[in-house]
Image: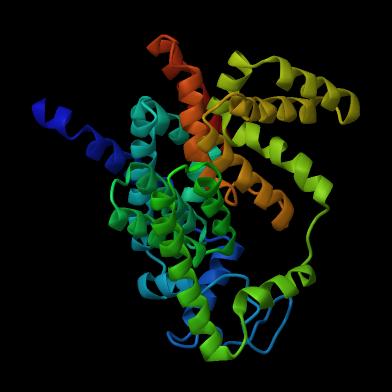
Length: 356
């Protein structure tokens, strides 16, 4: 018993990681097969020297939307569980530590996410870069929050730089401390570490290919087909509710007016099922009201990047927001009896089981 009490966090993190691995489906999605194929084609020091057989069809892969860090990782680990495990451990560790920083129950925070299909399903798709970038991005912000020395701030920044060089949209996360950090001496090492790692990688690609990769990706972004902006604006809350059901239920319980009004509008405009999804989705959004400004900024900046920059509002694109959303949800129900908190998680788990 004493061992369990002293190592509670390690046990929970290992159990959450094990559950994430066990729920991983064996068949790969098309996007996973594509990333695996690219990793196999890419040379270590020439990551874009392969012909692109899919839109936008180029003689080389230089217009591929991501930096090469994840391709290298995939090339190193291959199609195996080792692709996911380090990032799953880092993901669940970040969730536990963020909960501790905000003085809420880490067990409830992990429980919220383990009962959310929109968390477990992206976590199980390790052959795409979303798990890696989310784990690195969350860990960087968590480490920055607890950093007490210049060197630890630099380390946190370097980790964010690795996230940015896994997927470019991770650059949005650097805005959070820039917005709210009052101590310039703490902020500067973090920003320098992040940008230093990122620009070193980008400069290396420039030296290899004679072009700036990020600039080329931005120029080619409109070539790939994407939905209307309005579809992504509506698509985000439509996906949020079912993806993060325990958080939606808590949001509806503590802030019911906004979700119900939006749900009524959805009922008149689109019909029954859409109204239900919108009500649940805006229930998740209601958690942001009067929430911690760091956590709220974290969520809103990522959501903004998804709506503006991506082709659709898939949960894997906003996976990194699920940790702060879980913390906000637990903060809203901190006064509830424990049985009620875990009942919400249990109901959501049963519903997720029917979906999966």
